[in-house]
Amino acid sequence: MINEENKTAKTHVKDQEFTVPLKPFLGVLSTSPSESGVHSTIPPRYCGGNIDCKELVEGSTVYLPITVEGALFSAGDGHAAQGDGEVSGQAIESPFDQVNLTLTVIEDLQLKMPRANTPAGWITFGFDEDLNKATAIALEGMIELMQEIYQIEKTEAVALASVCVDLKITQIVNQVKGVHAILPHNHLFSTVVDKSKE
Image 1: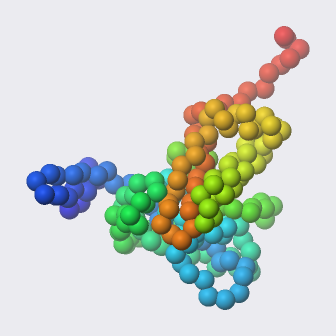
Image 2 (image 1 turned 30 degrees about the horizontal axis):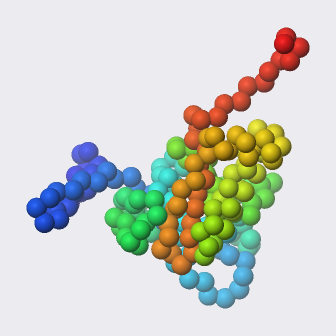
């Protein structure tokens, strides 16, 4: 049962009532892969797909690589709530009557993997059958993003990431594992220092 007033869902298990806060998002956001053939919609990949990241809520900007003419963007798989990992393969699945999306092509942005600017912070993703490899891909993407944003060297970005970037398991159930790295908006501030006054 869903309570629209306070945006929660509730269910009963034996003699206990459980309440879950709702945080709607789309599980699938994707452009088309460049490889020819038929592609399963189950696993996420370098062009997006079944990402299933609960941070991609209203107000998020998702950046996806474009590898084919026209991008062939698709979206779907509405979720009302999901935990990181989606451990049983189940979320609170939710058909959406309406979704407002704005699509923009950024000509000079070259991406190898999806990234996002969300209310929670900047996010980079890694996908692989091996969870360690997925983690390394997500972290590499975040280090590159921090270098772009702050104009710093890789060693400096790694040092800063170690104290303010969170690594989370996005999902473990869609044939390949998903990891996302989050740089929260309120965790790292940059100001220009006038060294002549030191």
